[in-house]
Length: 194
Length: 194
DNA sequence: ACAATCCGGATATTACACGTCCAGATTCCC
DNA sequence: GGGAATCTGGACGTGTAATATCCGGATTGT
Ligand code: SF4
Ligand code: SF4
Image 1 (cartoon, each protein chain N blue to C red):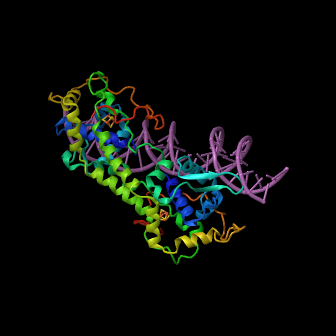
Image 2: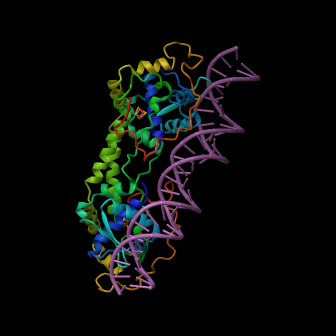
Image 3: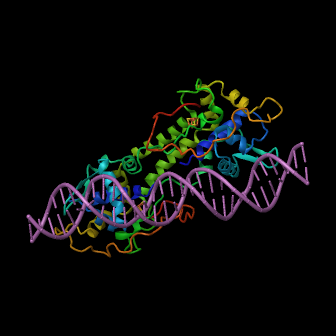
């Protein structure tokens, strides 16, 4: 699964925590997590095309949530970023080699391998669709009570002026951080934050 | 998911359908599905290292099932080929940018995003672990009754001599078939065979 | 008018799945 | 014993897709 999913979930949650219907630009969302702004913009565009975010152009434009968090499931976000294809893609190797003789038999009958994989995929998708971003937000706030306020403070919301300079070090040495190698593993359990 | 999973499942089922404890070489398994032999060998080695197959070297060597089909789950095969990593890998973007201030808070508390994704992954793994290759085989035979006998015939089993020449066109124009493009989609439902 | 922003495509870079090849070890058959 | 067939494990090459950047165009606020 591409890391764009993680970015997308975090951006949606951030937009919700701001509790503010003013749109937030790609640059500011990217600075909040030190992500490459141009690439993050691609993911946000995908979320907008999927109807999860709405985008407004112009100098005070940006992105905002298209609907409340409890109407956005994790399945929505994953599908918007990853596309609709299933993980297991059948290559029809069964029709090759010893199965490539007469087209008489083995046609149109459902495949046991593919349908077994399909059942597992369905279980995954159901589990994703059963969890809304509101659930995730609630669980996160249960772990870290001050979360929303901290984010609002970092974004300078609450003050009517949109805070001319970014409060912290802004975006500087952002990109070129090679995604943590999958083999190295490092820490095991689901790590910090919420 | 890599196509090696499909190859692995088909090879295990084929070994079971042969109803014969003589090992089958990589070359013959590859010829049966027109797969690149050297690369299929890599997948079979992974299955052997996972304890699903046993390999015997030597001129009459090859691979055979290490245990009966009803003791091999789809989860076993997928893990053997794909490795143990979860699909969603957290990059800890939460610790960057606005979250990179003091190490005092947000440490060691479980992550809501990661654990939600983890729950979905667990559902997928449970669904895979609940289906054994024996189930898949039974479902396949329900769809195409003559399956096992046809495979045994193609492999020349039943005749005590291991059939000096491959019955059909053997392996010739095997590889270089670009895996069906994921975007093209083509047919929708789980396709033919079993 | 100008600046900030989104939009969408083109392009570059990098990681990894895919595939080949080779030297070594083991076993079978003559 | 010698040769052939096979597995083993690693190095290597290849091609595609994920990652990342860039630019021209359109839209909107000041
Ligand atoms: S048996 Fe199923 S998984 Fe295998 S090639 Fe046929 S359709 Fe694909
Ligand atoms: S909040 Fe969860 S998913 Fe996001 S960076 Fe932290 S641990 Fe990873």
